[in-house]
Length: 435
Image (cartoon, rainbow, N blue to C red; front, side, top):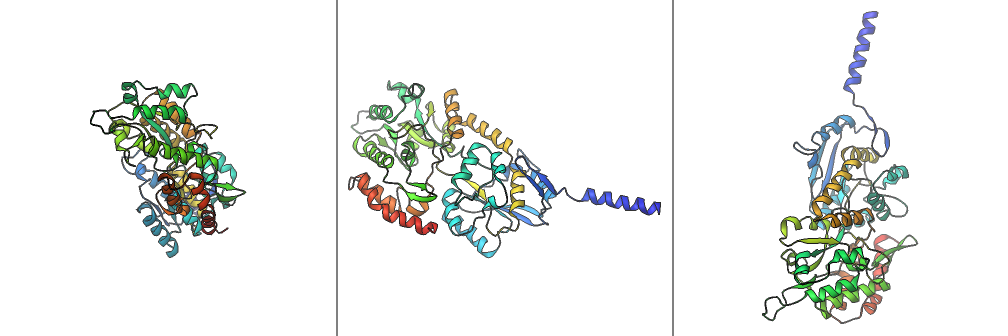
């Protein structure tokens, strides 16, 4: 009998050793029992966020740890194109029932139409507000902005807006050579606004080689809505919980009027949407997202600096919009949403995100002042982005694009053009969002 008891005890000990620890508490939530039952998890996106966990990565071996801890058969990556083609693949997986253990990486331009199609799971069904209180500010803001009807859909710190926040880069070498004011001094003296920037842009725009042709400009062309946001405006706002077209608000109308003045009346804008002319030293100012700012160190010979987008006349403070807001999402047909969130927490951790963000600032900042401004911008992200371009279009397409072109050509005033499209734009929003 004693021998049998010893054998039984040995068997139980071996079972405990062989069985993974299925209760899990992350750096932001207590998930309790987590067991994938040997299922394969697929991370779907246009770039591979798992690279840091592969051999040679900063956190090599973490995938194998996760598989053992959560009883996962495999964790793999499926690459899809960015944009509409990628969206079609996500939806195909969803409709075929292949997405039950997927984690989807989506830009905001893909997230909203997929939400409207009923393909995104509201994670606030399985996690509480305490979860979000333990996230960095930008992720709390992201969850708020990308939430709909009181439900939240984002949960991850795998990525943030620190690579997509828009600032104004300036060519320090050009400004010093031409005897023009220092944007850092204007910023520190609370004089960094559209008037002071416009004055510099006018003086910077000139023919430098005497051939009668302008070959140096004050500003890059305004691709996107950055200047609308810098003036405190937005094409669409939430009003009483409903997405409402606000393109006829004074802040938007005045921004569009100023954009036309810069480009077609003052003629201080040059180059193309790629902004290579700024990298080549031909333009004084360029509105750039931080991922592109990170390319300046290797791609630009001239010295440069970074300031916020100057404050517009209708703005009460500086605004820090984003050109893209990425996050991870869970499909609406997920077999175990809470387990997928637990896996995300195990792979991508808050402390490591914040460390990586700080290193990113160091790589992007050319000097101490720029470092401080980059930090301030990301830590005080104002949340603007072109969230509803998938409905009303961008400056070069659909109903908003038509109005924008009419304004820039001088065919219509900004006030008239935006008032004209308002009823149709609102109807498009109502239809897309099921109001």
